Image (cartoon, rainbow, N blue to C red; front, side, top):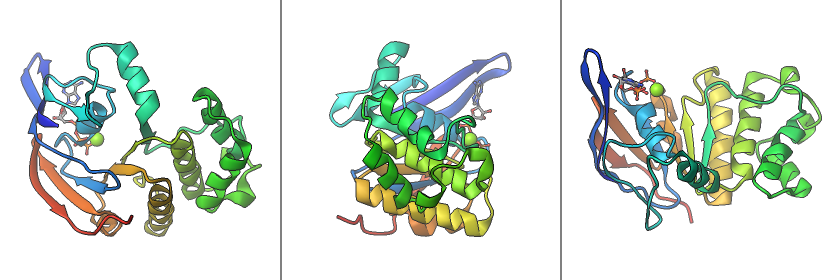
Amino acid sequence: MVGLKRHYETPAGVVKALDGIDLEIHEGERVILLGPSGSGKTTLLNCLSALDSPTDGSYIFQGNEVPRNSSEKMTSFRRENIGYVFQFFNLLQDLSVLENIQLIQELSGKKNPTRAKELLSLVGLEEEMGRFPGEISGGQQQRVAIARSIAKKPTLLLGDELTGNLDTETSQKVMQALVEACAKEKITAIFVTHDESLVEYATRVIRIDSGKIMSDETVAQIEV
Ligand SMILES: Nc1ncnc2c1ncn2[C@@H]1O[C@H](COP(=O)(O)OP(=O)(O)OP(=O)(O)O)[C@@H](O)[C@H]1O
Ligand SMILES: [Mg+2]
């Protein structure tokens, strides 16, 4: 993306949530995005996933301009390419762990019971698959959410504070499961966090402040 901007008009004036972001993300990278509260991290993820349209600048995804200002086209771009993991796991409480995964497969036309089970064992939850979200821990729920987000084989996986609700030890487990899943499924990932200790799971660390990139470092090789 080049010169990406997202400005909000507010009664108090214009808020420059993103103020000229130039960024090229390569396949297989795991990027950690750090920055103070209000620096534009969520806004950037929303633009990357076409949940939101930038005010200015270009965003090319695998050679094509990403649609904007058309909710229909933005939705289909998102369906085809993007996986999203939230801070609050957003699992359906009335469905079992396995059914939560299968539902997403059905919605994206990729029903495959064997793969659903494989994904759960990838995140270490094969034994919990018949349970309901209310019957497993927060860290386990987040691992279900991760399995669910990769069930549709996204090209790009985005996470906003996905360990924000978990203790340190559980965060580590969730991140390990995530790194393994991304490497195995060849998924590029971008995670927003406030937790500096998660840097060890990244191949690249980007810091933003006031809608601008402050630093951008590659810290590890991409596994092939
Ligand atoms: N809908 C909106 N209307 C006006 N201003 C907004 C809107 N959404 C976000 N902003 C402003 O844009 C800036 C960036 O917000 P953003 O949510 O991207 O920050 P963030 O880095 O994700 O912060 P946090 O770490 O607290 O989640 C902030 O100044 C915020 O107040
Ligand atoms: Mg945010």
